[in-house]
Length: 163
Image 1 (cartoon, one colour):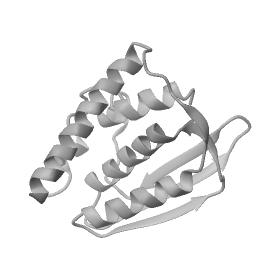
Image 2: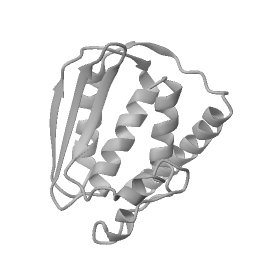
Image 3: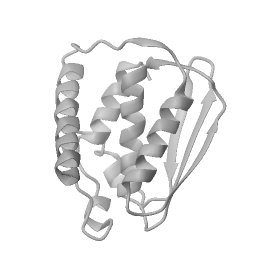
Image 4: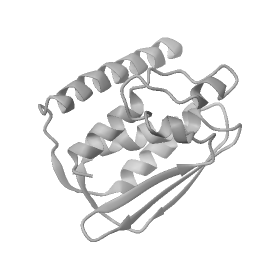
């Protein structure tokens, strides 16, 4: 039952990404941007990922900002996507640094990891729909699963936030 539940949740997430990307591309998705606190969002996500992964994950969180002007739900989905990628394309032991800082007009949120990295050639196409870096082929024991929608989703949501 737990395997079926996880598979169902994964499919539901994938379908929602596809619908959201379509709405974003057609300027039909409205962001409900307000002052949100990233800390509770990040804490909830780090606990979720720690309990759901097979390898050790160490999160280092250093947030210099208390709030950000964002859509709470989509901010969580973006961070979740980046954490998921960091884990998928990492070595046997994962270290993920999540930091934030203020610029003149923006809150800058960074998710950095000790993963395999993205080649310069892949960096040019990785944000396009259905693209996956060559790291996807060489990562993890059985290769990382995915459809190449995650980073496109992240990119579209960040652009909708004027980021």
